[in-house]
Image 1 (cartoon, rainbow, N blue to C red):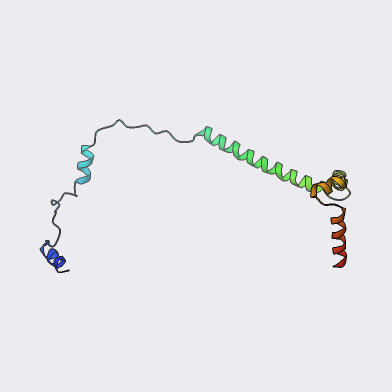
Image 2: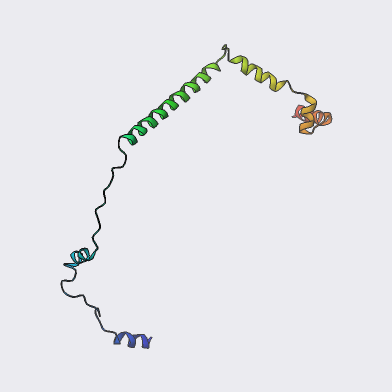
Length: 126
């Protein structure tokens, strides 16, 4: 600790480096004068009429797709109402779910008649 105090005491106070007076006043003009000359680059406008045309076509396609999806959604919802011709498909698919082979189902779920009777007895006791 004593050495640190002694070491700090020997260091000069203030800033040891100085910038010449007026150095930063003309600094930017000096840097610009030292840069090499380059030919000017012609900039093209991004987009144009072709770009705007494709943007409008894309927006119109998105709107048409949205309208089509909405119409198809509501057309499907309307066909599911009772008394409609679309119910024949629903009734047929519901009937096909219940028209399964019981033996194949029992093999699939790996239960036999004893397990079914046990489940029925447990359900009757509850």
